[in-house]
Image (cartoon, rainbow, N blue to C red):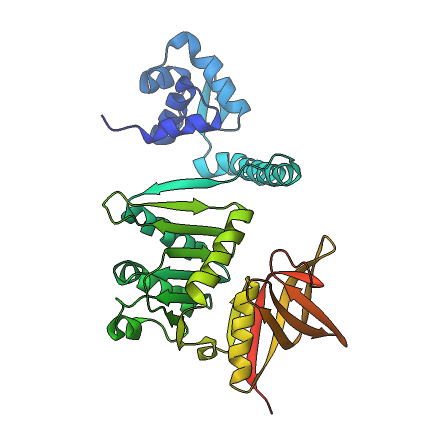
Length: 339
């Protein structure tokens, strides 16, 4: 038998008898106690307890007509809107408290998840791409790139920076199907399939050549840092550009090395770059705007770019930012030809 949708009112604290009475009044209209017993099926001795409880909860109203007391239901949306608002406020407050408590907790539990089989790995990749707000960095074989190419195009249209490394199995036909704003590099040999979204979540597909391949999903900051380092040196750096960052004058970013790559691309085309960035310095976060004057890259050691803001030049780095004034959190680059 199909579940009665009215049973869902139990989440608002209604008992089974209260649900039956409220349902009868909603559907059949105002009734006296005798009619309620007949139409709801609850025992006669319980009827007044139930209607009084419903009245206290604001779900029904009553009026006296002669010697008879008549009850009627308050419409569902009117009766429950305040409760829904209270529950929504409670959820927001709970979410805020949990995030604050987790931030202040001394216990740091790595979030690592094993994903078995390629289809589930692709589904998780799609989730990360869909949720990305700034950038998606990835490397994929053709067969898997085809499965997510449409989603990548959609995110590129929305202004998310997509930087993909393809392997020799990807031909010009698939490349031409990708949005021109997508940054594409080709690696001569096949490497691991990796996806990093907003430098906060990542997946590596560990393909062992069998049908039981698996993926590792991370939200642990230190492991994302290692994965990011691996991607840059092992996959990105040995690859050659097919399309670079200059196919779009605006780029959202959250990774220092990708920012350096983008700025270098623009400057090589004679463009100047301004930025609005959220940075962390001295344990505090702040938004800074200005012109990016130069970059300094020492592979394996540092990726630094310099922002001129209010006659002061700020050096900005990635996660560790050991040598810089500030650490990049996220931001937007804007490029234009020099006048």
